[in-house]
Length: 66
Image 1 (tube, one colour):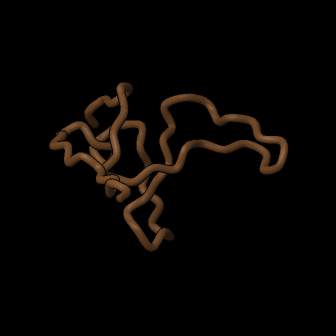
Image 2 (tube, one colour; image 1 turned 180 degrees about the vertical axis):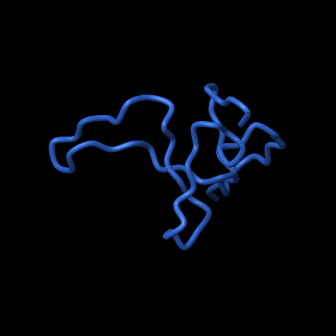
Image 3 (cartoon, one colour; image 1 turned 45 degrees about the vertical axis):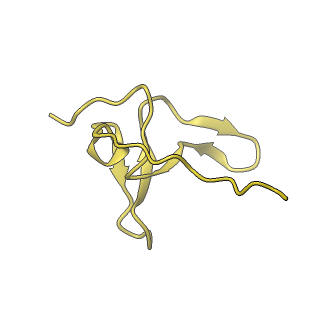
């Protein structure tokens, strides 16, 4: 019998939605935005792109908004 894979629940305060580099997309249906921590990544098929993240995600580059 296969074991069901579950996502661990992590309590964190340092989420993208609170980061100074994260910019909310008001046109999105969900709570998503783009991370502007680093320059856009050139993509051959789409020009340049920045990572799209949800407000409740996090990373090691988080900085609180001033």
